[in-house]
Length: 178
Image 1 (cartoon, rainbow, N blue to C red):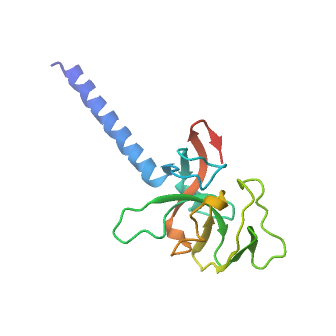
Image 2: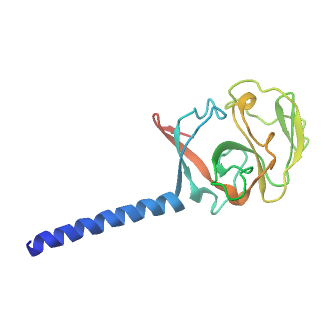
């Protein structure tokens, strides 16, 4: 084998190894690539949609009310592999969240949270009040009548360190900014 062929093979091996290492780094430090398994976020995100969440979104800032976040399910048993969930952040640290006749009220406000643009249907039910502890968040799906969310979990709140990133877009089927 000639010297040029050997150099070309080494060059390809180096390029492939570098691309592989870069892809792992991006997936572990920059983005979360996830498939949505259920209809709890309909009609914003549908079952089987593929989404990208940006891990860097919350490095300099805090999660905000209304953000769609990817996080580790809080009721996972110790030692089990984490399960990723996608829900909307409703309650921030220190908030009191109460749901009356399907409408969300934050901190005993006389006006319900404005949510009409993303809810699938008119929600029903009374829940709470829930006092969100410091360093934790209250999460709900957009399909409120069909969402296993903070209202029903044993560990009602998602701790900040379990929030992996903010959903920025759906890439399959079709592209859609969130």
